[in-house]
Figure 1 (cartoon, helix red, strand yellow):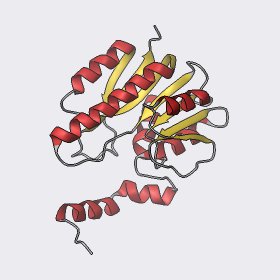
Figure 2 (cartoon, rainbow, N blue to C red):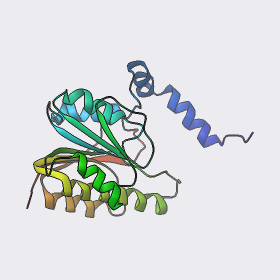
Figure 3 (cartoon, one colour):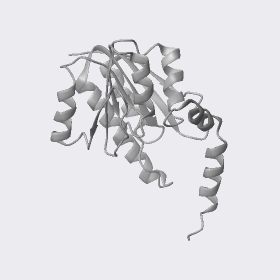
Length: 208
């Protein structure tokens, strides 16, 4: 059996001693990422009963799980990911790459025209540890999420998108500000301090 590297060993030790990991396990959430959305939702009053939410890169499903509970029975959660995701009651899931027409059309088929209240994206690439490789991949995913928001949001809708500070970051923020009335960068407590991730919180989409 191959030995784990020192870095992977440190990651595992940190992961299993992480209070957010322990709390997620105790409370039945699918991952610690739920607490990032929970904090921002409570602070910003994002998700409301009856809203329609599209969760991009949803697997393993913690954000969809949280959104489903918050939106109550009158709301809807549509989730999509290239990866498979275990079913969640009340969440409509489309597996596939939403850049492909067939997958995109399946997603649109579940959504009423221009009535999405929130697009959520916690998407991130598999990190190699090489910034020159990881940053362009991360920015590409953020750009995809922002583009999808522009296609499905209702007038006045919002988006919460994971972004990584580095090359392309400022251009993405400028693009968001051209489409939304209010754009802020936020870093929830559950984001690890050393991580370059922040979240682009965009509100009041302008439907031209």
